[in-house]
Image (cartoon, rainbow, N blue to C red; front, side, top):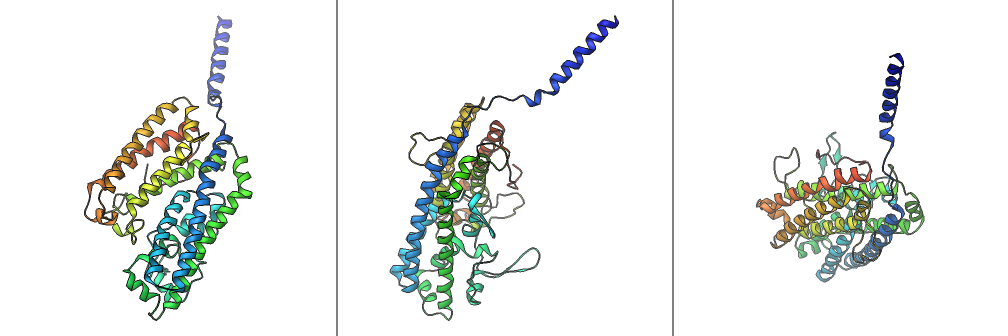
Amino acid sequence: MKFLQNWIYLLVVCCFIACGSDDTVRPVDTFDRATLLESQLQKIILPRLSKSKESVDKLKNDVDAFIQNPTIGNLQIAKQQWVIAYKDWITISFLDFGPGEGTFGTITENIGTFPVRIQNGTSPAGTTLKGIETLIEERDYSINNFFRDTRGFLGLEYLLFADNESVIISKFTTTSNFETRKLYTSAVINDIQNRINELNIAWNGSYKSTFLASKGTDVGSSTSLLYNSFLKHFEQLKNFKVGVPSGLRAGQTKVEPEKVEGYYSGLSTEFAKIHFESIKALYRGYDIDSTNAIGFTNYLRSISGGEALILSTQTQMNSIDTVLVQLSANALPLSQKIQSQDPLISSLFTELSKLTRFIKSDMSSLMGISITFSSGDGD
């Protein structure tokens, strides 16, 4: 009997040890992440950077021409090129990691922040936050500060689009501070161009090898950085380009249409469509040329349950596309649609929110990649 008891005890101990070691036994990771990184670099990142650099360089020339000779014709050319350059910027605004990080924040914080601040405001701590017009009045166009909502693409949009064209011309020719306005505008476009050029140089230079060499899934690896940036790119669209101006974020009690992206140009809906196209391209791994392209869909196909998740994700993306098409059918600016409580706005936010589960919790779980940021909206 004692022998039997000892034998049973031994079996229990063995089972306990075996069960305790289960959490170290994981499926073999067979996906070649090096191909994902190389494809994203060659099919997405470098082509988009090149296109953005080209459009920003032209924007710099057109804005300089307007500053030197403020005519309605030159203003219209600068405004047209701003739209082109801003659309290209949206497609690279996810590059907030690696060379996209700097002393005064990420590149998106520095040249993509909206809404912009026109007049002085006050921080929660009670300090004065200067606005664009104050900085112009004070002849402060240093740019080296944390007033990131007074510059960048949307700061330039304010300077070029905020009034009818004859008023803008007068602000650059006859008002008491027109020379300072010219200097401020020049500083803003120079800062945009410098940051885009520096990002382009880094990705085509030293950071390229760094990005390709980090093939793991741990925090700080290139796959983790890319996936988290993809998620933040999505959250920016859902939360800040749709949710906040529509008053649909947690804690909001009213709509805030003046907080839309592209408020002064009135192109917010078009920008949202381009942003979502950019998100879908990052997910599948290509913008135009799908030959030999590797995206997150390929990663998911190598994992049990991945095909089902791809199908669910694509179905939900199609639903978002449908709402965006319907929203675009109305030519009114997004801010006016929000003000008039167009039901398509809440539909868009709802459909975007439904996508969150698939590309955030489910996708992160299947790929075994940690989410390293907080969106702050409880999802």
